[in-house]
Length: 162
Image 1 (cartoon, one colour):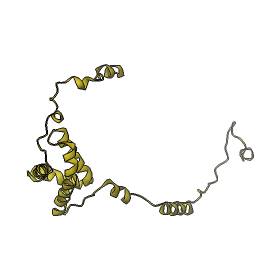
Image 2 (cartoon, one colour):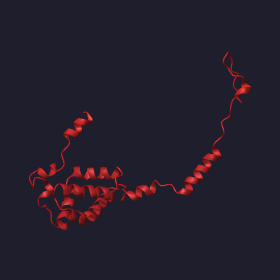
Image 3 (tube, one colour):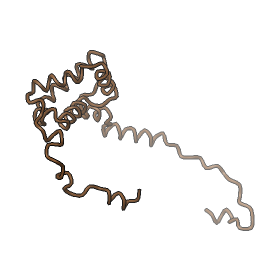
Image 4 (cartoon, helix red, strand yellow):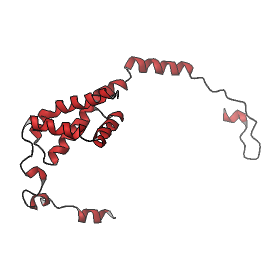
């Protein structure tokens, strides 16, 4: 599709305001209004069916931090109109603990936050400096093999090359 066609097919500014009020899930009153209801909702959502349970364990095993998984679950539920963002923020620590408990029950290693991933993959300045020094020591100057004298009409004499 040409770039001009994508521009023509793009939504115009204010187009999102032209739909009927109440057509979007987040424009309606939430189904869950208390933190306790939201906690029960997430417990059922994570532990309710074996498929959900297995999916959660697979996601945790993939290395995605627990905090990110909980945030994704919470924001998706807000977008679908299950609860408001403030209830989601209040229930977020409970969801994180629930996910960590599920991982612990099945001996699945997990990462709590993205900061832990960065700390594991960071090399200190001192370690980097030592590694560079070691490479400089190990670097061997390539030996220049004597080559044959160029031959032919256009060949430069060797004393002119140096």
